[in-house]
Amino acid sequence: MKRLSAGEWIAHVLATDPPRHKSLVVTVCGDTIAPHGGAFWLGSMIELLAPLGVGERLVRTSVFRLVQEGWLTASREGRRSRYELEAAALPRFERANRRIYSAPGLEWDGKWTFVLAPGGSIDSELRAQLRKELEWEGFAMLATGVMAHPAPERDTLRDLLARNDAESKVFVCEVAELAGLGSRPLPQLVRDCWNLDAVVEGYQAFIETFAPLPALLGQDDITPQDAFAIRTLLIHAYRRVQLHDPMLPLALLPQPWPGSSAYALARDIYRLCQARAEQHLLAMLRREDPATPDADAAFHARFGGLQVE
Image (cartoon, rainbow, N blue to C red; front, top):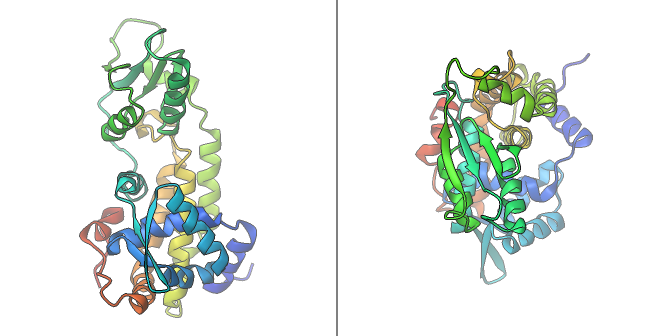
């Protein structure tokens, strides 16, 4: 099969698996806007997304909806519109960034976190809401009112309970296996309670789609605009797969775990295209706002460290 150029690869991906427009704007906000001060002019976002097949009307609609949903705040200067990441949404971006740019957990102390809501302690509406949000964070329901995860992010769990006014209504505890007691090892809960088939398929599809890019990005003719498009599509696709990954410790997962290979591939591609992508991004942002800052230190720490050029 003929090796595609960068432009051909981008066109192929957009044609075969076009991203949802609003979700793509969220990806750009988290991956590229947040490290550069967290604000953008609407004209800049329109220019950034045009090569990704998102027209002006769709950008305007997507940004408007994100304002309504509390992701962005809006202001005007004459006929121009400026948007900034909503302060209340920043923790959500930060949690997503920790998942995306950090290596999968390699260490585990053997303890599990249980969230317990005994019958009568909370009403059915709150119980259903907590179950939905805890499952979104990778927890599994072991029984009615019993949710478990071997290695949840504690700050995320704390925020989740506070946001739902459930801090004083549930029990949260750490559980360790008692060696020599019981007939089944506790780690077997993973096989019984988490269906990882769809996650495995998602990672494998990601790898298949993006595997050609390291060689392609080694060519000197990749334009900054194409590099930005590739980086954006990369993070958008990787984020989408990760949303369905319960992020269990590697020690509990079937080996070889494709999430590790997907992370390594995403890391390598990101490192290869980030400098040229930044060149294009800053040109677009500074056309509307010359004071747009360079990327912050957290950006250069992504994927274990990016080369500063």
